[in-house]
Image (cartoon, rainbow, N blue to C red; front, top):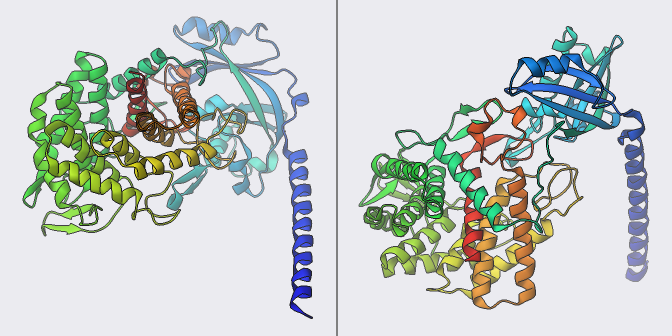
Length: 560
């Protein structure tokens, strides 16, 4: 058989293989859709009506009409001032997979679906609001290596149901009929909240969102200047954990808000947080000063502290902070290699630089050195920032999956914008514009997922989009838009990027706790203005509010 005939036969085999694969896959998808799709005809207009007080259900009734008398609900509302009635109308039902039990976590759409369980003629409902209040979504599967969490916490959900039925968890699924249901939530008598979209978002929306995020962080600063680093929103419990890069980043954002709004509480919180860095976290690193508390310190903590101190000094909140900047930038420059890259760690005991690299730190250092030059005009800082940026967008970018991943290194484009008037880098701007174009391809449009995800970034409809990357990418995207405007980029390119940013900012404002689902929170006022990790993950870390808030402030600066 000659080569041409062999090639033709191989192509025919491949073609038929692909056709068979496509046919089998299509039939499988159709069968799964038919078997597990939600059906509205089984909902029968039922409403699971609950009375909530301080994040707890105190009464419940299942009715077929919102106006139907429900004495238990009325009594609960009368005896609990401030309680809220919430109606979750069932609009669709469908089966779930309970065997194997490992399939159950992925059977529900987070934040949209609940469980209906019937046992011995009695039916109990575990509604989306209850699952949100217990933070049961996106807890069932945890792939630590990828930072991925997904699925229902089936163990928690079954424990709640077993308690209600008064039976052991073991064997519950063997005896009970389990279905999922979709709801639409409403609060009788309450006006529906205004929905912020890319088209309806105003500068006042943006400004009030930034101020609310700043006030949330400021409320969490204690007398020593430390933040409430991680908070569980439903219970308002402070969780364990702390690190200096995020402390410094949050301090920077507070300084931005202090410049936006002359507020005594925010001013005090900014200066207390800054003093914690200056007076307690600034240590000797060889011949220089750096930020850290361990034997091994990182470049990111020092870089973000420089950015925070420069902002405080520039805005005249406390000009004396300019005095500590040179000692810190000397450390950053000492960590820089001849090719512009930074060695990201330093061993204080051995007075030795450690030539390793991690995400973010080089971009943070480039921006820090640029901000320091703007403040103090040391040409060494400008030269170091210029060389760092050239490395980041040139030789440091080797392939699509390199350590400065195309969707993550958001500080680089902020440095590009910051340096534009003193050391413009056309290659860096091209890099940032290409990055934003890449992000635009991954940005969800309305209706592409079952979530409220228009403006978020992701790769499919199964996982709940994370909100923190939206905030950080918006910081970089708005900085890119600013630099592109000054560089005279084409209007069509600018308008596309502007709409992309508006869509992301509107998403962040919709999910910010203002006011959010207050009835699910024990102390809603304590978390007002906070930014959750996702639509269903309500852990509140300080950098979530920082990235969102800094993006909002950047947008306002862009308008000016």
